[in-house]
Image 1 (cartoon, rainbow, N blue to C red):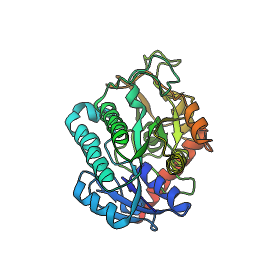
Image 2 (image 1 turned 180 degrees about the vertical axis):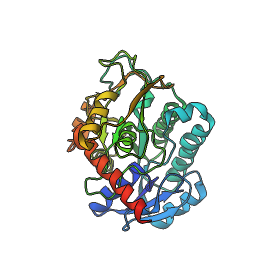
Image 3 (image 1 turned 90 degrees about the horizontal axis):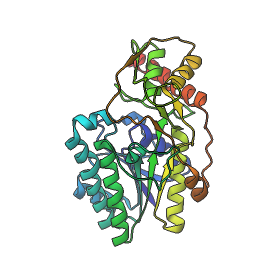
Image 4 (image 1 turned 180 degrees about the horizontal axis):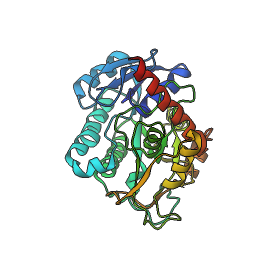
Length: 330
């Protein structure tokens, strides 16, 4: 039985491939390499360059490789970019996901795991936010992901097909063995940006908004280590294979850290007091977003192994140093 990982040359997708290969699964990666890297794909996995929106090509790939499950990461993920380019996000995240789901259904794929987001909740009234909270995304990014969740729900009702939608909170860190990490240039994720500032790859770090209704005025987020997230996907795949149960699950630790707290953690880990400046709020940023994570623990038996901000930061910092060494040898 072979697992198809879309976007498997990207940040989270490459960690998923590592987790699958580590436990002996046969893996095919489908990636157009727009933001992914060939070198990030484990050599035991087959890399196919292509687009998830090409239904005919994906269907042929499913049939030729005997694909039993799809884990779908491919898509665009920057909230401010989605506000300036909504149609691009609806094309890449919604239209192309619909094409992939169609190829999976018509190709006889039984299991589908979707990379969703906490952005589907918008501005939650209560934190931690549970899966039963109202869904009111405030960005095209969040809306594009919610639309895909709805398509999966309806496809599962109509066909012999089941799915898990995992709503990620803030994913960070890197493979503890140093095999992969967040490598995309001009990234916007706070921990990566802070690590780049600490290592001199950026002149400074900008804090967007210090007047939120939070303890220190900056946004609060729930940061989940990418390796713990990959294990959540493995457990989701096992559950689909054993129970054929459709699930929607939050992926977070249930504890939030402010922007200033994250910056302090990076300064501790790097021992560098880098330049931090304040700026206006960005559109689409809720004040706080913390996961209600009881359901995933109870349903899948998921127990985090790296639930520690200092560890997350250390792994991210180590990966950033690796990227600098890699660039120096190319």
